[in-house]
Length: 123
Image (cartoon, rainbow, N blue to C red; front, side, top):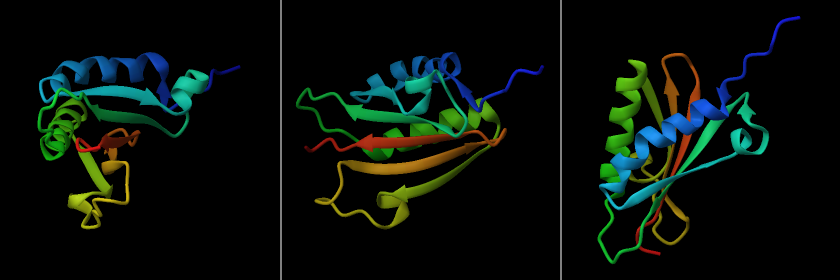
């Protein structure tokens, strides 16, 4: 009997968080992992990363965060396809409507997906 290979295992998702945490901390953000990989220990779909501002009275730059994530994922996989679903890069930002300033799907070279939600720094 063969073992089912999931898109994401918890240890793989945690490694992504551990890799990114010091990078986003430099921009006064931190990373939280959510979704099925937390609930079940694996996901057959994607991982959800929440990039949330640390409130120190600083100005938060969500555009820099998105650029940092794009750079990280493209270097890690050799290819990344970013599909912005919400935010200035998607052309549909409405300051008062959403908890997140950006929501994007990163599709890696191996076709695994990472959904990213960047929290507003001005809540």
